Image (cartoon, rainbow, N blue to C red; front, side, top):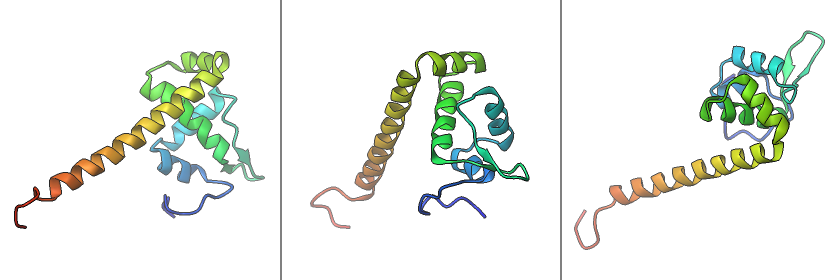
Length: 121
């Protein structure tokens, strides 16, 4: 089953859903789980991971530090340990700016698609 971004929020997500949602390989998620104590999905008796919304937020923070800020794993671990509030604030600001940028690009596309005032279609 593919990830549907319009679906209502669930309580638990599979590793595949999280992988698709964040465009992060399954193997990377499993590796980060070992390296960052903040990422701790619940596992059932068969060992299948069930990620909560809180786990996904932690993964987004790690992804921001490792992929976007180009920190090493040890650097990201130190940043999350030493400055968890600053890391969260920075991550949230970046997410908001990305959202604003998407809205502005959509508006620009609409403006480019409509003819100037006073000219026939």
